[in-house]
Length: 132
Image (cartoon, rainbow, N blue to C red):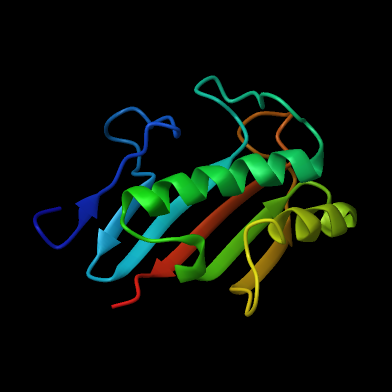
């Protein structure tokens, strides 16, 4: 990838095996976070398995990656949320309020058939722009 991008890692977020993808890349002032979920290294969610709980865990992973990249959740401009049960969108929204205030980021919510592990309910990717 050369010097145009910088890969960022965070201790709280398991890294994928080499050659698959990066969890977080920084290009200039823009930070791209790959889809995160509540699963651990084996994929199964740990802790609170509810939609709200998985959303909070997922957003905490995104927050850890952004902080490692020198940004905060206030720098997020776009979220894409994938869920296996769109009827629980209220729980997703409730969990988001613990991480965002004021003008929320632009967001897309999509219902999908499944995620990498059958017990996962939500996956979120983010784009942030560091403030100068």
